[in-house]
Length: 223
Ligand code: SAH
Ligand code: DHB
Ligand code: MG
Image (tube, rainbow, N blue to C red; front, side, top):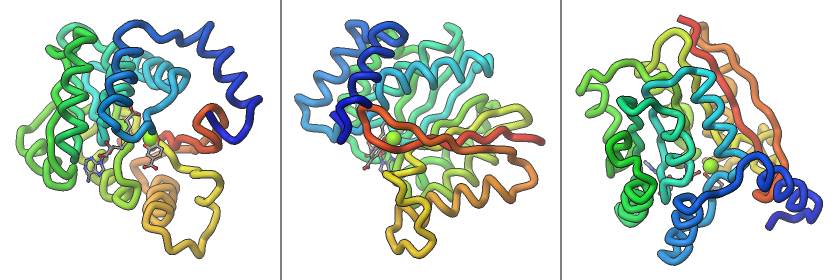
């Protein structure tokens, strides 16, 4: 439920026709709530949007930073071919445990790997593994580190890859240049980096819906 009934009603209408939950997605949210994880997963409409982006990309490899209960993970991993790979990084072992169960129930455990630890600790290890470039990166963890995650995303992608950053509007707080809040400073730094980086072309889109007023940034890796 958001602050606006009409935003909730419209999301419910769109989701019922365009992004209906199935058993695995419903069970993922149920178990996430039962384990008292924060209920800040993407909506079904947003999950379907991520899935469509992965399909448009023809993604074979996806990196997610911030797994939570694996809800966005399941939406995106369903876009992958059976020999595709999604690596998701999660700091909290309790979240990762719920996510691993949810992902297995969705039949995606052969495609998805959850790596536990602070992403800035596990990303160097991931780079050392020399993975093929990721076709899609979804950044959705601690917002203060968004510019660092964007730097890592640039290292781990190649020409044509797409980077998506969640929660870049935060009820409009992103427009506050004087904000001292870590999340806003981190998100502003990421937006400004997308705007000025020679290897990135991007934009950001404001959204409303059952999660309130927020938005995504999208950036294509140029070279
Ligand atoms: N992508 C999920 C929501 C992620 S919520 C979905 O839409 O379904 C943000 C997650 O990032 C939380 O689970 C939180 O524990 C995790 N997180 C916070 N700090 C982190 C860090 N330093 N490294 C990795 N994950 C982190
Ligand atoms: C928060 C995190 C998210 O990933 C999100 O989509 C919404 C809120 C949060 O930590 O407040
Ligand atoms: Mg988010």
